Image (cartoon, rainbow, N blue to C red; front, side):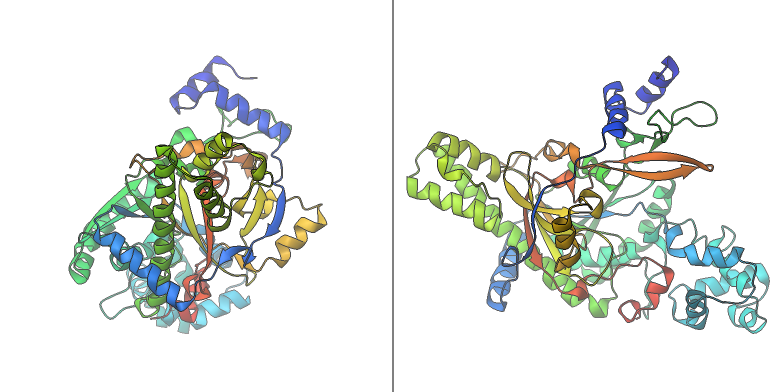
Length: 506
């Protein structure tokens, strides 16, 4: 099936032959669905601290920052904005000239409210010799759309989301990348420094660097912090081979194998390269203007406070187990912590002898930890918080996507559709062990949680293999805690018209 030329191509990407053969085998076998116990809910896997506890935990975080720990804000930012403009691309190609769909009408009726309006007006003037107002009066709507999307205009059809103008301010419009710098200064800085890491596509790296060179000093001065901004790209070694519908390798027109990016799960390798005690993870497009940042900052500090509070207890228990000088009562206390606070349960734990119990408890305590904000379910597409069975028979908290759930199981579908909460990708992670050494994060991935999707290339159907998602299977063997956060902290931008929502207006 594979020839000598293929093996050379595979080696050049830094992928082993074994990996490729394993991926081709996975196309044939598929991935198993996860076994669910319940959708997580408040009182069963999701915590909702009261005001007094919030204040205590926020103070815990502020104290931790004051101790000089290294904190990094990690922002997946490789996505192109093309999907945001799907409706506008369709309008440019449509047979009609005037806005016809509800989406098109909304866009042009409220065009003044977009933060990029001024930049777009300038491009229209440069390229058409007319400003937006004149083009609207003349009914030349497509010229406006083309100047927004095309390379000769703003190039918003190809740029990354992180570099679009999202929000208006008196001192000029801001991109999501800038909003993340501001957030880092507000809740993720220590010792007067804020570390921000963006994962970007190779094609956009220089554009991000240019924007940082242009803007970072301004925000450093404004918020009194020094920014350390770094970038990484998804590694070619995390790409996956594509297959034909019959599971044979998909080949390009020149006969070479087609490899595709392995999805956001590939970023576990980028996260593994980060040197930090605590890492905040949030998507590039989930940002709000300063006037609405108070909730985001308050709850980010709360999540981080819960994380370092739990980590401190886990570290103390690990040191106690290391000492060998513990009582039966202390072991019972550790069991309660693992089962209640870390929500990792083992049905037959009482049957374990003390020596076996200590090995089990050490394994569950000495692993990366994440605290995830979850919001009340309002019908947004995406994953949710569940209690699921792991391969070792334990039950723990996981974020699941719909593709991981057996749709033919009525009980599971009821859990999924009636789940009270949703995952907005709001994570705070601890990635060093109790001896200060970094965990090797790929060791904690559940490789059986990838999934297969249908795609096409040049009109030919293909099967694509996605690696276990970054906050799904890639963090499957982490200690996980879910915390309810308000809907005000979740304001993603999936289409350009989402920027017209009140939450994104200045």
